[in-house]
Image (cartoon, rainbow, N blue to C red; front, top):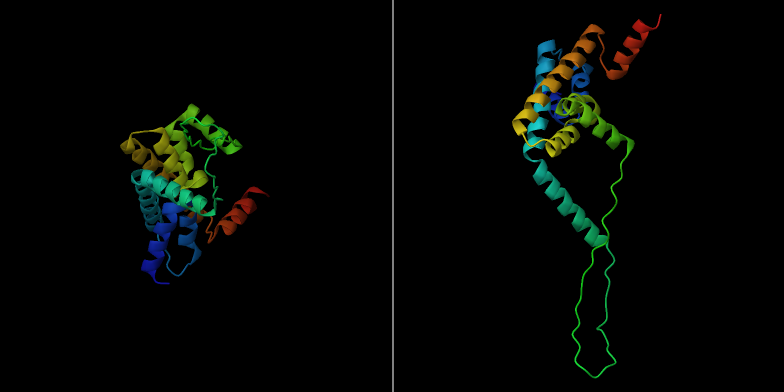
Amino acid sequence: MSEFSKIILIILLSSVKFVAGPPFAYYDSRYNFSFIETVSYCVIGGMLGVFIFTFFSRQLFKFWHYLKLKIQSAFKKKEVFSEPVADVEANLEIHYEYVSASAPKKVFTKRNRKLVRIWRKYGLFGIALLTPVFLSIPIGTVIANSLVDNRKKIIIYMFFSVLFWSLTMTTLFEVFHAASVKDLEQQIINTTIP
């Protein structure tokens, strides 16, 4: 794999699953990216994901719902009704009413409850801080966009969060001379447990 294609992969990985970016930069020692290069590629990738999911999340949701409806209608059993029959001599007026199925009840999982608590306590700052490492860029950005209307504010908060996590993760890989996440975990365990 060439150096350019590895840079593109780091950027693309960081734009969707940020946690995979720095380990991928350190996985192959042939390229030996510097600290600044690794941080820069991860930040570029993370912010690329933030921009895409900030400005196109509504279109992505519309497309997702369209796709979901098409798939459901393809597998849905078609109901056939016969013509109504009346046993009276007078003229009758018949009205049909289509009733949609009841809306599915919203399920509040433990994860949803935790996100609501974080939102109430820390607001956009809390969501942005958790996004790169715990939520992933797409999910965190979509949540932030659904809760806050100010895109500029979202982008600024996400930038500082992505920068913080990129610096933190790259520093850990540099300090412990790790080549993968497992290697990093092992190095941390070896230094903390005597």
